[in-house]
Image (cartoon, rainbow, N blue to C red; front, side):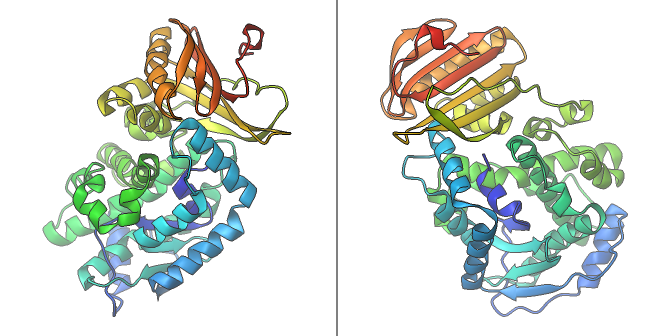
Length: 415
């Protein structure tokens, strides 16, 4: 399941989205060489060649994004992703992935680096000034610098089924560029690089002041908004932690040895320990269903899924105990009804039980009123607006089937 922003990022665009920077309506490019020299001094990495730059307006940007989606996201793949997001309860039933992707990024993008064409673009916006333009250029030139040394096209190419790893790599790409933009600003203002996490507070990105300026963002589902914010905010925090430990070598390290999951982005100490998520097999779909999508879920996904129906602190604490998760979405060959199966492994049976307790609230509310036909310490059976469901705990692993056309019999337990 491609996260919303990954639909564009894996098409080859490294975006500066939702930032405070705005490119002036009648811009003049600052001295790119000066910005390049500063970025080289901060990172120790040299620019190998010049980076072409161009301007476009919002209408041109929208056409550009439309073209990227058409070329890189097949309609059947967008449909399968949309279905999965709805079955998980991460977006409402009337959510349109393609339209929201283009509209949101048309509104949000202030600049972007196309790492297929190796060219950066700045989007003209009323109310901008030369200082803000300079910050946007610092962000995009940071992408260009990374591309010249680590090949962003190759870096962002992960297995199609490992969505969580792809999101983690996007956090590397956008987080480092955000950190370098803030470092550039800090050096310009103070002559030194301070602790930069305060420059990008993820909670501030969702404040009323920010959402009032971006109405598409303000009305988007929580999952969509947090998908957009996560790579910049949490990726920047990861870069800050690595820079504090390793200095300039951190800029190379995080590309040569990228995090394997969003959990390793959120918790830099887990990144430092290394390792891969343990991925359980999702249960078989009901008879007569064909598989349309499969992939992985990570701590980021579980944070938002649980956080939509529980206190955020409670959701974050529970999601931090995830070890690995997979999902599979299917479609009935005759009726075209949709179903979802997923499995998650936790760091202890107690953590798995805690997830089941919280997920019961999700099942009751995410697809209209739900009711249980059985509710025990280890299993949940019942029905909601998406269909029949069965969820069970076995040790530290939770397995679920949702959207089934009828009650799941005891013989249909997870295998």
